[in-house]
Image 1: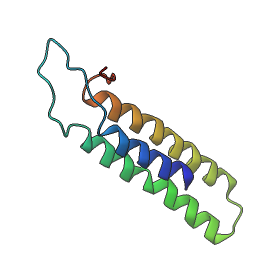
Image 2: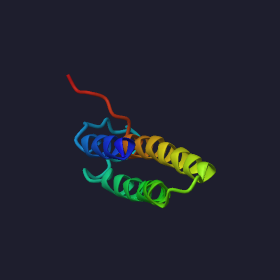
Image 3: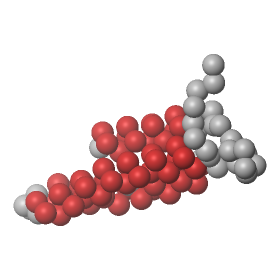
Length: 94
């Protein structure tokens, strides 16, 4: 659960980071990062639900839990990368 909530907090915080627009293309809309955040945040519910259900069942499905953890961490990493780079490279303005 900690992976899910930390990733959701990071996806939410990434919405307010400033972006640097590319010179060759116009600046993206201010809400361009919302769609990837919602997509990957929602997709993370599938492996989390699998982990909750296998824990509640009490059976020893080690490989199912292992796959669910790999999917959860993979979606967290890919989702954060998609959100960070969807509106241009983020750099802090001084």
